[in-house]
Length: 75
Image (cartoon, rainbow, N blue to C red; front, side, top):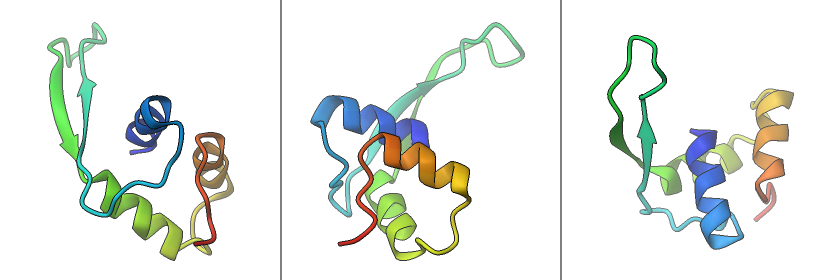
């Protein structure tokens, strides 16, 4: 999901995602078993809100990944 957050950040230059925002990412096409690319819609706004409200539980790696793309941990 952090890939969707990164994509949103690259387009919007912030990570203040509206709660109902759905981000579409393209997956697959890597030459492995999943050779065909397809679009996947992710409820990014809900996910970002949940990450913020559960700020005590993410792993340090997740915190680092999200902080790199502008995650604000305090509202």
